[in-house]
Image (cartoon, rainbow, N blue to C red; front, side, top):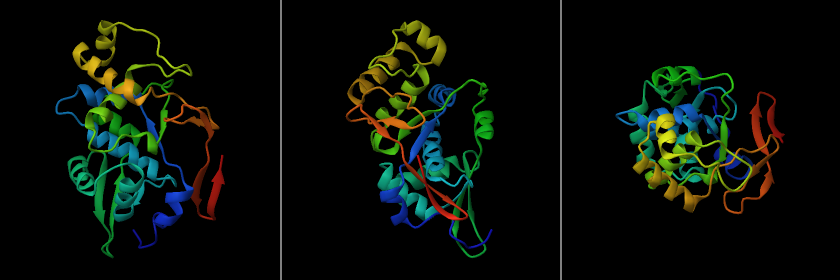
Length: 225
C-alpha cells in the first residue's frame, strides 16, 4: 500500500460528480428480516461503493467520511459507529505504513454470502442518486427505502402493482404491520423507480434528467454520460 491519493480532492467531487447508490433487492430484504438487523452497515456499504467511482475498492477514510457527510446526509459520529460495527464483514479498516487510514471494501459475493443470499443472474440493481437518500437521523425512512427497493418491482408509472400483505410477507419476511409503516413513510418520500442507462428520475419533481458522471482513470478525469 503506497501513500498516493486514492480519491480525487473533495472539490473535484462535490460539484462535478453525481454519486449513484446501487441497491441489490435481495440483500435489502435479508438485512431487514435478520436479527440483529444490519441495515445500517449495508446502507453504508452501498454509499461507500458509490463513492468508489474508480472501482478500486480502496478509499481514504477521512475523505470518504467528508463525502458521506456532504453528499449522503451522514453525521461524522454516525459513520464512525457504523464503520466499527461493519468492520471485517462489509469492509476492513486499515492503516498504511505511512499512517494513512483507509477502508478496503468487501465484494458483492462476500457480502451476499455473509447474509446467506443467493444472487440470481437476472437480479437487477436499483439506482438512486445520493440526494434521494434521507438523512442518517431518519432511520425509519432509510429502512422504508430498503424495503421499497426490495419488495416492489420498480415501474415507470407513479404506482406499484397491487400485491397482498400476505404475499409480501411470504416474499420479504416482513410482517404486515411493519409493511404498512414502511409504506406510510414511502408515501411521503415518493416511490423509487428504475432509471434508464442515460437518465435518472429526480426524486423531487419525478422528471427525467440526463445522467452525467465524472470517473477518475489513470489518464485523468473522464466525463461519461
